[in-house]
Length: 113
Image (spheres, rainbow, N blue to C red):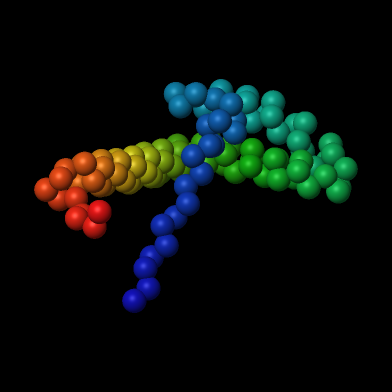
């Protein structure tokens, strides 16, 4: 039985463009232009792979956040992913505390001593 892969969600589009979650379309465009220009491949040597990667990240973030529909989908997927992470974290913490309680409780502790 194959399991469906959990999609990886890039939680950093807002930080990539250095904008707030409440940024307007105009703020997104302004930030994109400010950040993209120095990293544009035409402004950098062809061998500068870091610049190309940085420009692609900025461009991807802009493409998603500048479109209202894709931005809403992105925000929803980030929200869902964060809830999933929080649930997993809390579940792990609960298991840890449950394990620690069993270790301290003489009625449930192993008698292997």
